[in-house]
Image 1: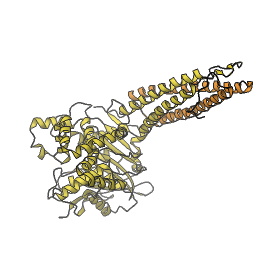
Image 2: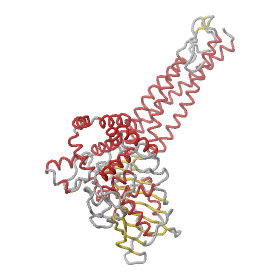
Image 3: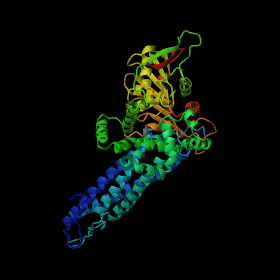
Image 4: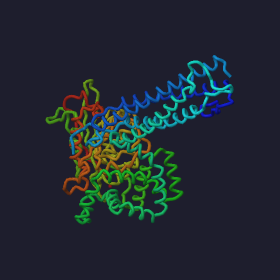
Length: 98
Length: 481
């Protein structure tokens, strides 16, 4: 089951299928988290390569700081989602519900 | 007008480097990715795993939402980041902090539609008229025509009444005019294809296969057309001869140039019958030969006549086209006469047409080159990425815009741009192109020298370590009739 091809799990769905869905969620979130991390690094490197000065540069720098803050918040939320989904998948498997 | 040389959105001087463009690309790419990641996470977060076949999953300590809420929060953040990144890239592009490169980048985004429009106009000349009128093109095209055919000389100015001349002068001294010329010139190849139909298209495709730029192709077509029509004399041999020669041991022998100001100051001044090329030879601390070759600007600015002056508009067009311009051939001949061997360390310096010549020879790979140009249209020159180069341009100077916009940006090099008038009118005077004045570039060179930005001085590297007076020549070149 791919990241974009997940089946709906609702009433009447077995625990095995729920685990599969959660594992897909984990894989997807993990993948996005990795790519996001690369994106944040690339942005930081791109900023470091540019030497600038002046008012516009300061304004840009402040806006870039906000963007990086937003990206880090997204990463933090993804990390939390990853932990919870992983825990849920592991728990369902461990307790053998299904 | 300000003397400030730092990179500043509303400031006077803009320094464009590839690092700015790279950052803009990173932001654009990041914005697109964030939107895509948000979609993906949203997809996997929407499915409810709270209930299984036996009912609610009751695992001690388990988040029944299994991270759905966190993922949803991440989606919101990612979408916001996507907007921020795109907006920030836009701010970077429009802040003028990477103006030179950004122009090319933005232009590339619009190139397809621009090309389509030009082709349409070319296939329907009536549309050209309507379009020109609709774009206040009466003035614009009048001035452009005046520019392109070399009517910028005082001679052509006599045919305009004083009010019109003042108006045109004011219009021409604006960054918007230079931008418009750049845009129009960039579409000239598509315009020609439109006029010429399929044969021209085939030619264009063949030309594209050879790697020539669209503007270069258009310039070549215009130059060849002018030659066939007898307007241009066509290519003829040129000779160069030294009109002055000063040995290192002579009294008054000059020391090596040290600054951008020196580079402009030693540029041949131009004028009928005057030398167009200056060459200096110096030795560095290791005794290695260092050569500096200056090439001056256009001398004969009207339509080519029967004079022997190679620094004319035929050479301008041929140089932009990447064809064998007589001014380029003359400069190479002068270099040969001075004894510069292939592979020698040469700094090429040029102003206006001389800048195209300097850039073309530097890009040829025949020498260990670096190049500095002032007010030169060099966008059609295929620079190697590792060629050290600096191009100084005034935003209100239409001449650098005459080579259009490069389709495939070349990494490396620095473009220094300075706004002379900050949106105001040019100072009163008779010069039809005050922003192209050599004296104004001398001022700008002083500002560049006063800057402590290392990127502005890197290109002068070959001049460091030169000591003592050197040998110098001034050459005059003529067509052989």
